[in-house]
Amino acid sequence: MLHKVFCYVLSVFLSLVLCIPAGAKPLKESVINGHVLSLSDALAMGMQRNLDLQAVKMNIPINTENVVVFESEFDPVFDASVSSLEEEIPTASQAFNEDVDHYTWTGADVGISKKFMFGLESHLAFETNRSRSNSTFYGLRPEYRDVLVLDLTQPLLRDFGMDPNTADLRISENQMRQAAYGYIQQAQNIGKDIEVAYYDLGNALAILRYRNKSRALALELVKGNQKKFEAGLVPITEVQEAQTALASRDEEIVFAMQQVEILSNRLKDLMEIRPGDPLYGDLFITDPVLGIDQTFPELDKALDIALKNRPDLQQKRIKVANQEIQIKYYSNQKLPRVDLGATLGINGLSGHGNSSSSYEGGYFDAISGMGKGDGHEWSVGLQFSYPIGNRAAHARYRRASQEKRQTIYRLKRMEGTIETSVENAMVTIRRSMERVKISERFEKLAAITLEQEMERLKKGLSDTFYILNFQNALIEAHIRKTTALFDFNKGLADLYLAMGTNLERYRIVAEINGKEINYDK
Image (cartoon, rainbow, N blue to C red; front, side, top):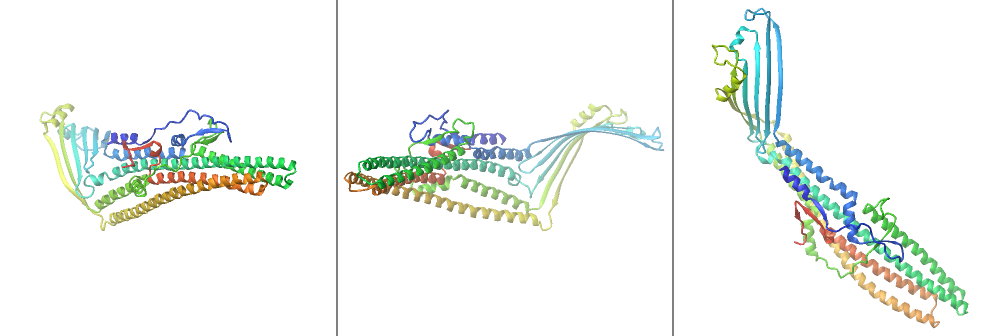
């Protein structure tokens, strides 16, 4: 059993197929200086370094030790004792050659006890002693006595059988499985947090790039208006209006940079990148976001996968199984206690060298006599006990039944919540896809409109106000499309977390009891 426990614990792990690079490669300088970080590397680093995950992982060896504790209840127990006695009692009896009754006794015993899983308790003991006295009558009593005794106690009603005697052990084994699923659940939650933080950072970087592009458009307009003003073609207000827009877009860049820095720090926190780490002082640059052409399961299949494989559901189901074990145990405890007891023993005697006694000889003669089985003892009996009313046992049984019903309600509620999470993730995915497609059309129209208005400006048919508005419309179209695309990917992250497969999606494989979990079946 203990071997199985150790094999079980060794098999509970997150196998990181991905590798963390020794050092991220510098990105070519564009908008900011930073380091390229892929999402898969961010997830792998987070799985290996996140301290919240490591803390939850400790529940596995903790619960493993609990299993060992309950297994040890069935381990053999060795016992031994040695004692010696001497007493002198004043006496006036003619049976003593002296004025005192002098008595000495020396004894030792060794034994081994064992409880079996079906309820039997056994104790095998070997006892030996030597006694001496100055009494004239004591010569008739053998000096050495050896006894081998086997005591057996078998419950016949309460505590009879494997179920009540192994209840705590089986519950502790299930709790170890719960700890393993808890570790996987925590890993999935942290993986989703890293994925969302990565997408938020990518979106912030994209917005920063568009804000820089917006500033470049405003700066180009300032320069063009300045030349026209110097040529006397436009009033100074055209230049000032363009300069005001430039200042406003500078402020937008500062705010966008602030968001990039905050989200980069958020990602570092999840990956446990602290002062002293080579990457601590740098900003992260994300890879290009994937498009809306990614495949994902249909709603029915996603719900089926979620309800079969979510680790929090597995934990709750194991809790129900534990409560069923407790109910069976408390049902057994309502029975009367009827124990069958039996004692079997053999003994050997020798000593004093009295020719009239058949027990003459030394210590080893007593051992030899015990082996012949000349002296023996046995007893058998029943012991009955029952608390009047037995209210405590009945109350524990009722309480365990109510707790199981309570857990089932919570399990059903969790299943409903998971279904809602899957459905909401699907809503986010599909609506984000629609937003991307609509924003693409708006983006094309905004680009055409700005291009046409710039042609009108060259002919003197437009002014700075209209150009700035059309520039803003184009930049906002870019941002809305990018945000919708990142929302689509965050929706996928929500979906795969709700299904319990977000780590497998990035080749971070979870195994329980040596078996790889395949969420697609």
